[in-house]
Image (cartoon, rainbow, N blue to C red):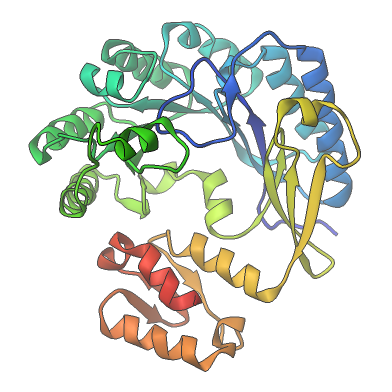
Amino acid sequence: MANHTPLGVYVHWPYCARICPYCDFNIYKNKALDAARWAEMLTRDLELMAARTPNRKLTSLYFGGGTPSLAPLDVIDAVICTCERLWGFEPGPEITIEANPTDAEQSHFEALAAAGVNRLSLGVQSLRDDALAFLGRDHDAASARRAIETAQRTFKRTTFDLIYARPGQTLSAWRDELGEALNFGVGHLSLYQLTIEPGTAFAKAVAAGRWAPATEDQCADQFDLAQEMTADAGLPAYEISNHAAQDARSRHNLIYWNYHDYIGVGPGAHGRLSIDGRRLATEAAKTPADYLSGGADRYVTEVLDETAQLVERLTMGLRLTDGVTLYADDYFYADERRTERLHALIDDGLVTLDCGRLRATVNGRRVLNAVLYELLR
């Protein structure tokens, strides 16, 4: 019997032309590679995962990284064709690839669209040259603007990222930059507050006192401004960092946030699968060399207990403005103290619980980590 619950595939491409100073993803400097070997290993893993998920069709396919738009087109094409052969796609599937707005990558847009990609996610990060230099990007503002316009002509759906709460960025400057971004008329924007991740070049710079991050008040003011401006433009927040028209929401990311099933292939890729009443977490070997080795131990699978599932379900689901459902017999209520803390959060105006739907309020999403700590400790 066919299973029509959403299922996505995530493919991690680990290479970038350069490593940005704020990034802590599993990425490596671009280098010469064996495209045939990559296609072979990704295909082999997709076949293994398809055997574990029979009678399913794919809602989405997402190429992330790294910079997957730099991957050989033969690899992209092989993955798309393999997914079609093994599962097939639900009607109107979303096939996304991440790209940077360099002129070199723009030259590949038409080929990617011809291969079946129908949604492009551009790592613009800023529309200001001084900010792009600070962020270590290898494009300028002019190429970012060209890339957005080219993507809109080439793909059915386009989204791009911006990073705000940068050192020295004023509220007025953020208003002007976000206004320019909204004027492009894309259906989806991802707006990320600059965070200092351990082990990154930015973390070392801050520790050395070379510059200081934005204050909590500055971050909150810029967050609030983004909520207001995107809503007025018809792209309200549907997730803590993502804003879109109703029909332009990321179908793939909604699989994560709604805690549905997804398959992860490529170095360091994670997956979550519900099989025979168990929730399984999978993780691929992290380095490209280990991944390409073909060894039987390239994937680790863990069975998640009820506590681990609750942590993941709330951590992901409360990012959404729609929140997460708590049924009367939900494991959440197994701890009376947790229920007491929930009601305290409701009284504080940080969450709401209506007809079994738990949602973080706007104030709650500002301090979501603190809300989650109270619910899950």
